Image 1 (cartoon, rainbow, N blue to C red):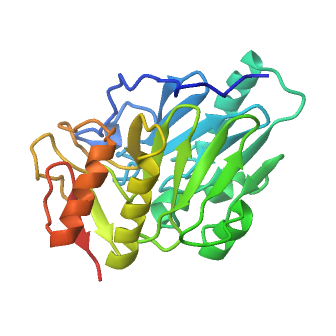
Image 2: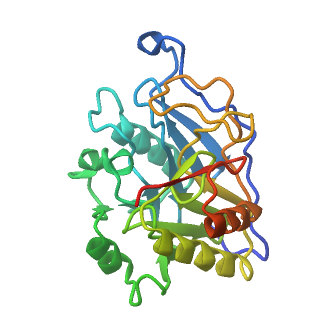
Length: 281
């Protein structure tokens, strides 16, 4: 059994060049899914922009009893986006190093938008697998949220525990996941280097306040969202639908960016350097 309890978060590596598409998407030589090992038990996946311009990031976390796949990408067809096959191979590799008689998989989501749940059907018939539905009721029921959106929940993967915080504002069923083992704060579309679409300003502001309060008492190593949409030039983003982004900034942000989001929300400012607030109300 792996002891995931540590006095300080286990820091992994974000020394990675994310594949950001190709000038001619039809001739992109890169795989449909890029896999980066943040650590031995934590993998970050990115869908190729040549497959879908959203190019969401997905996260695969291993515990002693089961793994968590967070989000399933923007494409349903396994011929173009072989997520199930990729996850099965990664789990087989992990289990070869860490044998278990039985091992499960939880498929969950940062929120219920189509570019984060499209691959769900690939896991519908997978043995020892639980797929969490994307609705608020399904999220609350599976994770046991008793006081949505103010309460918290926990997900135990077998010695590896994640804190779950309600994250509505971008989408009503959004959840933010904090991994105690690595200190990663997985914010979905609530914070990332890109356009932060605010569906409900009051709920979004409450989510940011909730996260800021959480971060004052909890070690956070990196804030990782699910997209990169900015260029390395402050306030300049790539247009929606772009399939080639050769000048991307890193994925990782910090808790300081949460404070900047909160300040921007107070004045309804648009461009904020590393992100842009877009109000959909």
